[in-house]
Length: 315
Image 1: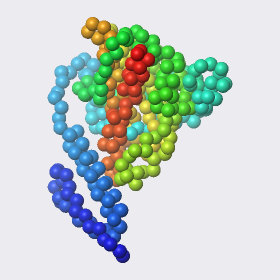
Image 2 (image 1 turned 180 degrees about the vertical axis):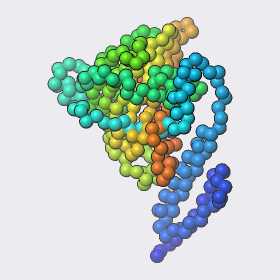
Image 3 (image 1 turned 90 degrees about the horizontal axis):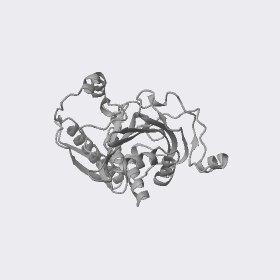
Image 4 (image 1 turned 90 degrees about the vertical axis):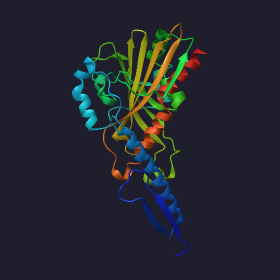
């Protein structure tokens, strides 16, 4: 049978049934793959233990009391990592160059008809809060300052018809972009909402243990809902999106938040958050993907790219 490979693998702390697993395999590449997978599984277990550590209770607000039932439901079903948006069969998506040729305008997207129910799509954020609200008690993934900008100019840029489409093209290599115009939410007056569909390249730099578990496509269709919530002295920008074609993409949505606050003397200060809202649990055989999806999502947030693009345009 040829040369044999023998490996001993120690389990992470927390496993009570046994501490070691001895495998004797005749194919060395299988031994390497199992060892790599085991390491990923150990990291996933450590993340689960961290999730079980209780957080410091906060003083309940009137809104918290009103949303108690929503928060209880969210506690029972924890958010899921990689979220895949359902694709709309009624949308005829064209590439950006074709859309430009058809319309003769400089827009980087094709227009979608305004759906009166668009404000009700992806209308829940992690923790049961409203999708246009900032996270509470979560550490931001990044922060920055825009010394030459102000809140009104940032709002004007984000709310313009073409800026987001061009940003998606240039920053994320998106194509086949279609979008509704910005409109005021019927469920939350004062909040502006916009739906967009597009196609994105799928990163391929995943560990070998992951690529042995699932087949990654080169591209994925995405559905996203953008929201703008102007407030006194600050602007909250959020996006929630689903990637339809990636494995288990329908099991989760990625929810990102960016808050722009007026600086103490001038300019604007920003903070960014990336969260994963799990809609359905992963199969137990693929549970190791959860931590990897969350890490990937937080490492390359769309909100951080938005801030960088605004900062670059102001320089």
